[in-house]
Structures are given as C-alpha cells and as structure tokens.
Length: 323
Image 1 (cartoon, rainbow, N blue to C red):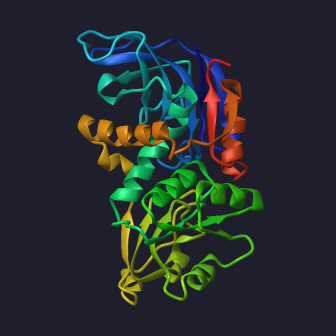
Image 2: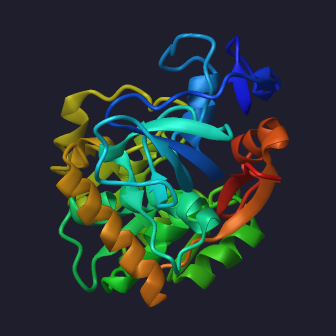
Image 3: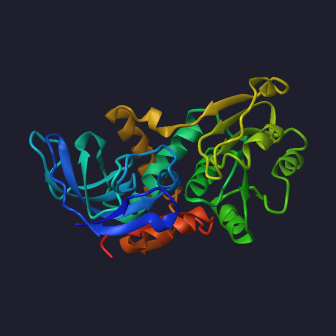
C-alpha cells in the first residue's frame, strides 16, 4: 500500500510517499480502507519533533473510510461499514489497523471528506464549548484563529448557544469567513492589538471566556483581554508553546485557567460515541458546517501541511487518499 512516511524530524520536506506492507488486523482490530484523512497542527508538531515519536512512522490521527477486514473475535463491526476515527496514528495511508473500540459509525448523510475534516476538531470544539466554562446566551467568548478548521466550528457552536463571539484572524479573507460563520466581531491581529480591541468591544469589561489554540503569540495577552474573574482555556500551541506564566499573575483579576485536552474526555467508548453524536447531529441539522479549504491527494501531503503551517488556509485541509 501507499503511505506517507517520516524518517527524520524536520520541515514538510521530510514527508515522503512510499510503498509499505499492508498491515493485518490483530484480534480486536479492524483493517480500515481509508478514503480521506484530516490534516492537523498536531501532525505538524509531531513531524517537527515535538513529542519525540519514534522514527520512522506514518503521520495522521484522524480518517474516514470503510472497514475492509476484521481480526479474530470482532463482532461489533464488519467489512463494508462506514466509519471514522480520531486518534489512531497512521492515517496518511491507504490502510490502517484500528482497535474496533475506537471506530465510530459514520452516518450515511455525512461524506468521508466531512467525516475526516469534522470529527477530531468537532469533538474538540464540543469539549471546549461545554467543559471549561458555562456558556449561556450573552456570554462573550474570544476565539483565536477563528477562521481555522476548529475556529470556524467553535464560532458556530458558541453562536448556536447564544454567545457573543469575538474572533481573531490574520487576513481580510479570514475575517469574512469568521463573520460568515457567525462571529459578531472580528479582530485582525496583524493590524490591531487584540487585547485592547477586546476591551474596547466589551466596554472595558473584557471577554468572559478566552479559547486559545495559538499559544506563544497570544497567551500572555489573553490575561489583558479576559474580564475580572474570567476564564482562559489553553488547548493548543499552533505558534509554539505558550510563554511560562507565574501563578501569581492570575491573582490580580482572579482569572482561572484550564489546560484543554480533548483526549481526556473520550477515554470510554460511551463518551466517545456521545460526543461524536453531538457533532454529527449538528452537521446533519445544518447549524454546524464543516468548511474544507483544500482537498489534496496523498502524494501532496507535504504541501497540505505547508498550507496549514503557514496559515494559508480557511477551514480544514483534507487528504483524498484514493486520488
């Protein structure tokens, strides 16, 4: 089978498509014929050496496809089932073996591309919306990178709950996309100080809740943007790890801080299915739309990561594995 392989850490040029043996499903596993794979910042971080994953490896955590074969003892899925998964390394490939407990049925009305683009980030959005702050109608939320794949989902989900959403973006085109998704206010952080602008937009009060997946370039200024007794959730590091923060810095405004990590909320199959069902329901009802910016063939995985890494995308980047 064809698979993207990483033999050394570095920039996107270390990604190469190779012919490798097709894996065989072990007891309790299914062999998935991958139709589409999602491209994420976590893939880029791993490729750059953050996390120091053993080399060589095939990148990619999320994919959608069809069960091709099953290992012994498997009764819960069968060949031909449409599925998606969100946390099994090896998705930039034509096939991957996945424990069946991690497979999620993909509704017929949701395409493979939508499944690969919306499941991991959709479940992440669901946890960020519901687990860290009690968002009610009128809550003011600041969403960084509001025109990214996850950012657009967050904007829509917060608006669905009646929040007032302020989004930060880097370009006018991204600002238009964030507004289209429902953002009430959009800040071009390349031209404006997002903390000062958030204070202006809220009449000097600040945002109730700041959702930050950017990290280094935003985190410390979040403390200026959030209101007294407000909350910040740091869930990513697209610009690099956030600068260190002395705990005493939270005391002046009685700010609370959470470390967001979706994987801690899907440890059981019951939780996994419950949270993905919420995502799929939103997509099928129409209030949650997955925006796919680019669909590229597996052979162009390096270009797919470059576009995401260099902030050249609005929405999600997906690999069409069969192209």
